[in-house]
Amino acid sequence: MKTQLFFVLILALTLASCAGGGNESSQSESAPAEKETAAAPVDNKAAGEKIFRTYCITCHGIDGKLGLNGAKDLTVSEISMEERINQVTNGKGLMTPFKDILTEEQIQQVAEYTVSLKTN
Ligand code: HEC
Image 1 (cartoon, protein in one colour):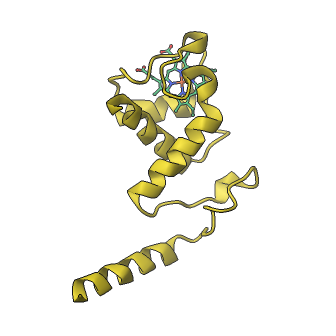
Image 2: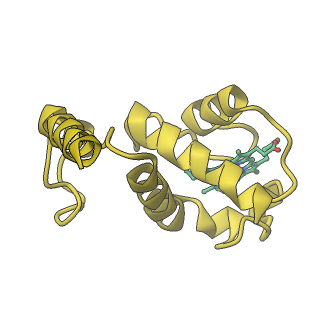
């Protein structure tokens, strides 16, 4: 029981240290730069999926396989996290650079999400 209590405490502290807060319910166009979503990996995945559905499916498709505008099939992509982050940040070929659209954290989240597409 003590361990459980300890965990809850840590969780509370982690959540409290996430300055932004409340971005779960009110994620909208307003000030994406102020978002802080560094909580659990699960949250990151949900956030990454949301970003992907908003910004990436136009070329990559919901499952990453669409390949419109010469986009690569993300389900077979072998590139590293670093390369993904770099490519989403700066764009490549016909792919839009997202550095002015998404925060670094959002880019990280969506890059992680693209890795999860690969295993599906
Ligand atoms: C305008 C169309 C377009 C949009 C929107 C787009 N991409 Fe791409 N994406 C591309 C193209 C084209 C390539 C291939 C670029 C090349 O290698 O020349 C690519 C390649 C990639 C790759 C590299 C795959 C590999 O194995 O080389 C990743 C990762 C990626 N996109 C992720 C994303 C993410 C994440 C988003 C949303 C934030 C996104 N893309 C939005 C067109 C797009």
